[in-house]
Length: 106
Image (cartoon, rainbow, N blue to C red):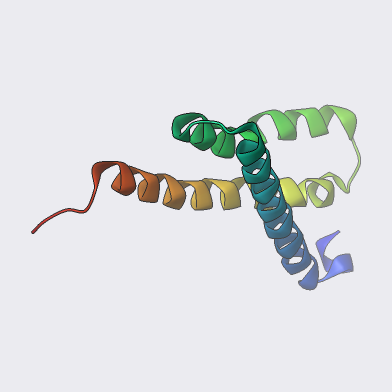
């Protein structure tokens, strides 16, 4: 499958996953503002709304696409999205924690 599609396919999947993540995050923030949620609820909504997990996606795809040699290709967006969300949300969580505590003095 990979030799048939070339190295550009993962880059396209990365761009699409990043765009989807960004769009979902912006949409969540807009809904949070319209709902006038408090800061804590807004943070929870932002982190939870865009979460996707390999733990449920891969077994489900294994059942749905059983025996299909393209399963790896089908799972590629999820295989990119999951670590992307973990990385970005990890950085965002660290930033939020610093904001909560305030600046450190040395």
